[in-house]
Length: 159
Image (cartoon, rainbow, N blue to C red; front, side):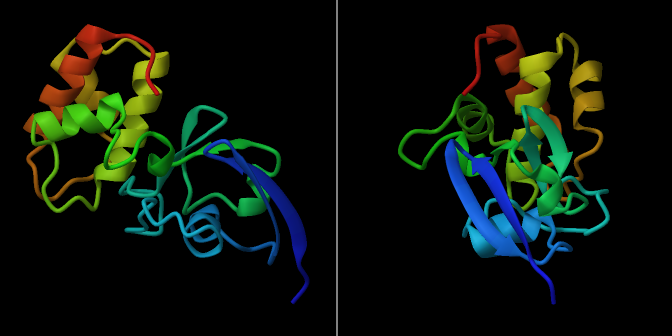
């Protein structure tokens, strides 16, 4: 199988690898870099669990070939904070109990990070619309909406 060289900046660090051209970005992040916070759910781009930021905008990593992200800045949930030093979105989710099983949480956090950086979220309707591409089977969304509402009121720069 032929390979291609790909070089990406992931969470501030440059990574170069020889990969099969058909390798998905989600597989590159999980299997090549060990960044397992990017979850793979439906593998059709519907559930949002695989959401990462490409050059600051949310993207479905299960629909993106790693080679398509050549030279781009990739942010994953691991780049937003650590267990000992949570980012603001992560902390708001924790404070408002915006997670249960946690499977959808990384994708939700990445989607909300993008939305809070680039769009006003002033009403619960806008927050729910922003979250509409991310499926959660556990929370009923209300605690997530509460977390995002708090962040939208703060509206400072996000990590």
